[in-house]
Length: 173
View (cartoon, rainbow, N blue to C red):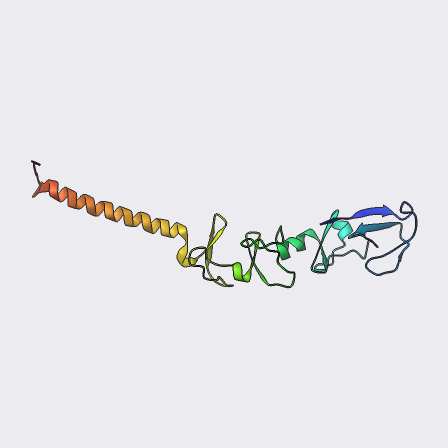
């Protein structure tokens, strides 16, 4: 992230060359970003072309592009790193993005079965972890709970059958 400084040409002590168009900056105001001076109209986001001096005091540079905060977050997430492996994601690489987190395609896998999830797959995110439709831990927990209840009910039925025969209590000796 780089700060954009708006300075009067007179305060800078001379005429500067624009980092965008390479022409002299004769305007009353100029911008200083990425260690270069810019015309106000030349410092633009590489994606949406918004003039960066008009949308805030910061800009982002990555992969040879100058970006506004909105486009930087869209392309790279808030950190610019994969949510699984934490390695930086090149600007030219395709990614998967879920809930504001960005993933390499190869890292976008089910936590349980490790199958790669692709566009169109149904999946769940639980506590920041990815699960395919078949391995949703909430469903597994429900199935385990149902299995435990069935085992307890079966045990109780058998136990009660031993205690009561034909409706009469059986005395233990």
